[in-house]
Image (cartoon, rainbow, N blue to C red):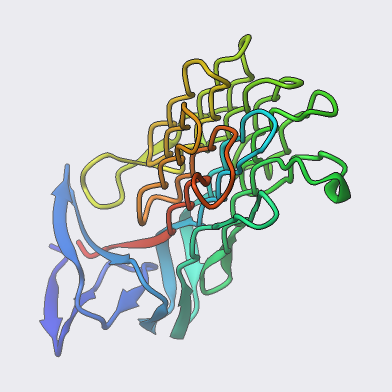
Length: 288
């Protein structure tokens, strides 16, 4: 029978070919005939691998911030990239952990910022795309990212959503000329485009069960409504868009990588887009 035991503070697995981590696990569970330890990391640091081998790695980057607009309505931020690496190889030694922050809104320019990348050793997830902007210097282009930001309700033309990174996310929805903002893309699907003056919904996230329970991450932010219904945040922490002059979008949920919601037309800083949610890293190793 395969055995596992505690040594110092960490769980030592004796399953051939699987990594051994000396840090204290966040939790343990059994699924069928297999036993696992998992490590949930919500802040940057390190993970100490004492024996090289295979592990299951989830890396979610920070979500992009939602935007605002003085002429119409802002868009939702793209979700942080979601990388799922099953049977990933971890070398022995200290593995660098980076948990990316969510992007914020720059009220003085009506732009938003992208989310920051997350990392587990050699495995990276790309930060979520910032929401589209009314700033002419940006040529009204919604930025790409882990998932792309939604297109702004621009006063100078229809704005397409930004592209997502293949294998980590999806594109944002299109905004409408002098109308509502598109939803940011999510790990599980693209953000919705505007319908008349209603904001587009954020794209859905994806569920993962490396902790023994199903948790959904990386939902896109909802676009703001232009005097109409705001877009909902995508499942997995996406923030909802706002409706009403000087109303602010909802922030993405912390440690989900959700995109921030867009803000309706306003004189900033009375209303602003929501900040993107920070990312997360989860590592699971088999111990028996």
